[in-house]
Image 1 (tube, rainbow, N blue to C red):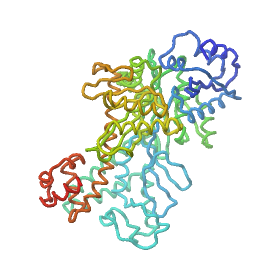
Image 2 (cartoon, rainbow, N blue to C red):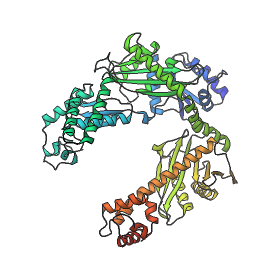
Image 3 (cartoon, rainbow, N blue to C red):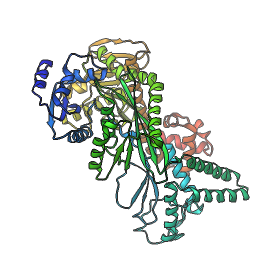
Length: 605
């Protein structure tokens, strides 16, 4: 539909609550929103009023929209949240998977329970979860602290099936584990150890301090000063954890606290989340959000918190700075998680101070990071817009970069890296083992790779979405080889190459390269894609070739794991080993001239 047709469709919208769904020319859902009065809200997108950059970008891509009527505002809010979580529209607030927080998990249903780190754990009967903890470093230190004080097991043995005693592992021999595998401890005694761990994770640090102090004194008396110093540092960490307790709360208090800062003339808002577990602040997390036209603080917080708890179970109490969202949010979360969730805005006391400090953190982060965020935007979405203008392509979102890796034509491999919205999407990366090419022929390798990629597009494989632009590492020859492969399969996708020597961009339309200054953001984005494709290809080649090389070297009489390890440590890379002369190999510690000749012959046979 054109803009006039969309406006006519808006005029027919009902004046009732519901959810509207915006779509682009391919029919993809790009935005989902809710409204008390559908007609008024949707109309604001297509009037002539000034719009923010985010809204302008959204509206310019809207070709059609649908709507769903609901009985109440709560129903609209719930439906909007479900649709956003399902479709992950481009222009909605999206919390990425890598923002998930880690938990400590103890499965009380297994014999001799372990203490493990878990992300997005499933809540099941008998499984105890502690957290979330905001930073991975902190939780790994916490787990190390537990293992150093309490002799919990770290192995993966299934004691429901394992009945006979075993030989102790290194942890058992060193006394770091109570060794249930060798009958070193019974279930009842081990459960007592786990009870002490649970007590510590619930904020009671007395037993932990006592054990660490005893270990420190024991190591000192045995003149093991390094071990004693390690215990003292861990003891100081426990003391710091005790001091982090918020004195007005007891150790059973669990809260999430949300704050928001919106600059007066800024198009961005910052949301800060504080996590209080067992009476102590376990960390803060900041999220930046591009404001749409007319969006109020309450609307942004509602949408954000709904998505924040898409997969994370909320505590029973949540503090927010805006009284307008209390009732709607409490009803939504209580219904979704089938438990009472109390959302409220404190007016006095420690909880009010908490909310104020979270708002202050949001303001501080937004103020101090505005330059960094602006630069990041130039390097990502800004660079994409420059690239669109440079190449005359209407829309570039997904870029795929390809590269070939081999040494002297052996074990040819190819990489495919993906950048979405100007940033690496590592879960989308793919590797190709070249099947039809023997010897060093990068043109033929690239042709096979792009042929296989094009067939995936024709098959509609959901794991291989259609890219907006393909980038080839190399010059005009590599580009034409890749284009020929796509043409033979019958797939048409914009394609360019980047020659490394002078960072020149080649297109199919011209034999003359495009030269841009090194400071150009579009060029810098292409260089990042090209370099990442190269790194990923080399990494795959080293992994693949390294396994076969090691296996081959083990066939040499008298050459074992330890000397092969020294070989790798000396030369650093597989390429260096492959290119080394017998004399250079003989210089490796433990490898003489005779073995060096055998290694060289085996590699080059």
